[in-house]
Image (cartoon, rainbow, N blue to C red; front, side):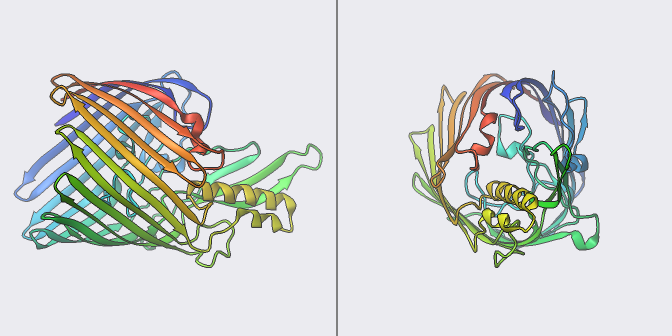
Length: 419
């Protein structure tokens, strides 16, 4: 058994509101137990008290399925699966994190495991992940090459901040617990030697929501509007590949995915269209304790939909509602521009026998000039003790990927003990 206990403080939360000052207490427990020869049990659970002093927001359907919110406390079995190894086969069954992709921070092929972006954790993306119930089988073709198959019978969506306007009744519709609502994937992966690479396919659902307007009406006496909006997660196909290699102090990595949706022609004004998402990066180490990763990030949207088309609806009220919903969908899914260009950089420097770690992560999209910065300093105080201070800066136009969550900009500090 291992784990950690942390006291932290965030000046802002990750919801789209104006609340400030969030002290928290987090407990993480991990277990790797060898039950028998070739049979292992792996589990990770965590209790996150992140809303101390604040009312608990109403749990979203995604949280209701996988998490438990009780008086500002999120308790979660993040992973819990059995692993059987026999000969060339390895089988995992249960709740598990399946992370695909070799690019840094941004992974086009990472379409299986959801993330909870409302969590307040200094580690960022990797800590936001929570496991899916899945059956995974690996077959070792050679010592360095594996064929991987995965079946996910229960869909779990990512949890993101949503700003619900007055008069809007919002509900999230997730696929049912039926056999035909499962997801499947396959991957051929090579690890080791001079080149790491893989090709992958996945048939599942969009982890991010897409807004659909149902009814829209206006009270003739008061003028109050009432709009019913559903958050849905349509089916999609993903075909992707990645690679990573090194030469001297230089490392090279890349990742690409083509995602085919049900709106290939762009006829539906509220649904995401197919897209190509790609990342190409270079990594360089300097001296023994400075590492720099720079990546180009691009996206091409096929038959991009202009959300203003929704205004052609014969019902002006419903047309306006559909326009706003479509625009929000395309901001969240990054489809407001046919071509999107951006770059990311991670600079990591260590001092004092690697006890002091200073890191800066940045991401900038050119077309709308929105960006994200996360400076972070971590210091190993003593055996098991670590102090971290940092911040998250979101900036851009209101209707841009990072501008949408600009009010979540803030600082954080954490004191953690690992055992």
